[in-house]
Image (tube, rainbow, N blue to C red; front, side, top):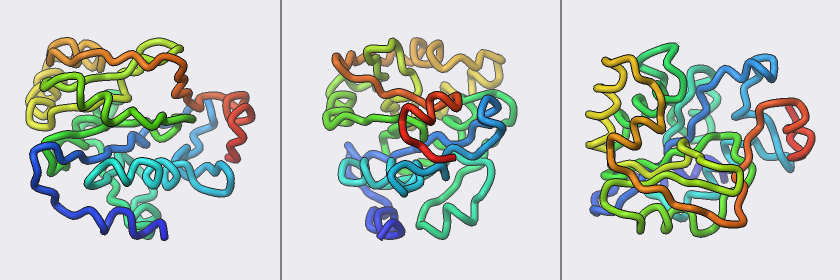
Length: 201
């Protein structure tokens, strides 16, 4: 079943079409370099669970990943390698923007623990320049909805200048902040985080 959610959404053309870009290219150094995308929760790999969770709200799905491309492909997912190495999350965002074929790109880290039901529509309603999320733990700049064309240009400028901070990029792009009260997207950075979220390495 997991292989069907991507092939069902092909080259959408409407103005509000959204591609989900899952950020799974991190090195996970605090977890011994394990690939977070394929850790399991409730028996389901994190990347597949996230893609399936958001599939009804997006028109296509791609993944920023620098390893295990064949494994993604076997599940109907296209893995996008960073075009510029060693620049942190901006490298993944830049690669996703280059590959995105829709007007909007929704980025979400693969290790978010919870995604609320109103995430996509709340970000989409925030304005024409795009938006990023803030939850009860503070700013979550990687949970964001980007204007794809503007992002391509802005990311190229940021990479050329050496300013790799995602929040600074969003500020320059005039993106809005959307506050999600009572929500903690969470993330998995340490063994304790994995245990608390019942994630199996």
